[in-house]
Structures are given as structure tokens and as C-alpha cells.
Length: 127
Image 1 (cartoon, rainbow, N blue to C red):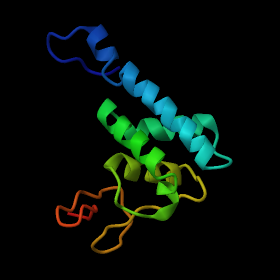
Image 2: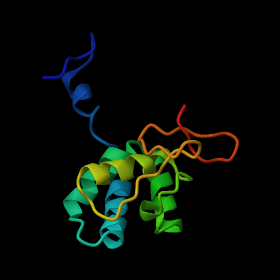
Image 3: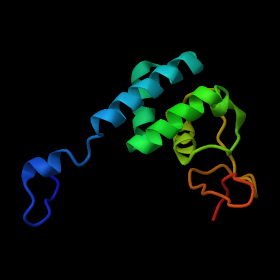
């Protein structure tokens, strides 16, 4: 059982790991896009990966917008993407999804989930 903060109520602790309703809706929209983009990807696997990648409403919206604007984002290997897309690519690859190319560092090319923004060219690189 998770530990509570001093003075916190058990009901406050229950919602802490749950996404907000808006984030949940966006994750379902992302999963719907993924099923269409990646043939053979099960809806539950898409929803699980979207949930791992997005986290909050802002990240969900950035990921959803990026996927809509760049349908090849998961197969291009480009790191010119929001961090949520990089996390999504790694979550999908870890789940065994084919045709996902992991984005690489703009500086050295290393494919890692720990990419950060590069202020110079706008493409993430390792810090």
C-alpha cells in the first residue's frame, strides 16, 4: 500500500497516480491514431504506450498535435519532436512494436529516451 503524506487523506492518495480526465481522453485519441499508423498494433498496447509517454494534459496535447502534423514521426527517427514523442517511441519499441524508429541525439546520433532540448537548432540532444 502506498504511503500517505502526513495529514493526507487516503482518498487524496488514490488519485495521484491516475491521469486527469482530460489527459485520459487525449491518451485515448493518441492510441486511436497509433492503431491507424502502426498496422498490427493492438488498441490496448497503444493505450498503454500513450499513457506511459504523455503523463499530463500539456504533454498529451503536444504529442497529439505532433502526430497529427507528422504521421511519419514514429518511423522517421527524427528527434525534432516533443519529449512525449520520444518517450512514446521508446515505450512502443520496448513493447516490441515493429516499424518504430527511435529518435537519436541531434549531436551524436545515440538513440536514448533521455533526450533534452538543444537550444541551437531546436532538436534534442543528450545533456
